[in-house]
Length: 230
Image (cartoon, rainbow, N blue to C red):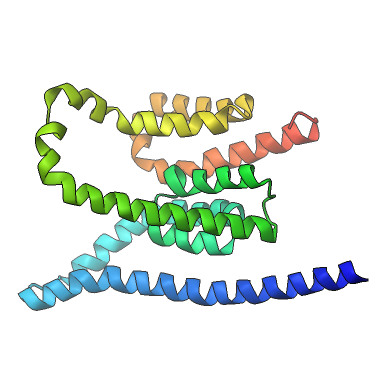
């Protein structure tokens, strides 16, 4: 009886917590969008250089047609993995795939929580919040040290390292997930490589091909699960 009361109290508190999380999260997302739009509009107003609204709308539609698929897919994939609070923080601060998601995954593995549980929501929120604060501090230090370190950063001997930062970063992140299920990772990767080699023009349509790659991964994972290999 006491355990049942404890679980009920825990569930009631968690529901209250999630209710407040959604209120503050929606307010934060709305404020973030407002600030992103307000900065260029304010500069245009002060300088008397307002945009051509027709051209701006056309440019927005062209960009939206490319990125709407990745936006929807990222939300559907990352939100269940991160939970409510961490999702709001991650989508506001950015760098989901290369920073926030690995931090939340590592925190979940360390704490031993399961996706979809209240414990995982709390752990993910704390990890993403910590990652966001550390990122801000590192960026501040980078801006402050940019001028003194310019001769070092522009040294010819370091240029090959800077040219390979992105491949090294994503390669290291990918290896962690690929190593858990090599077959599940290799099949979509092979299909995408063949498509890009056969039709190089598809390189500019990566956002649309996310749906194809994601669907292929889901179908393969389902088949492996049915056969007891996953």
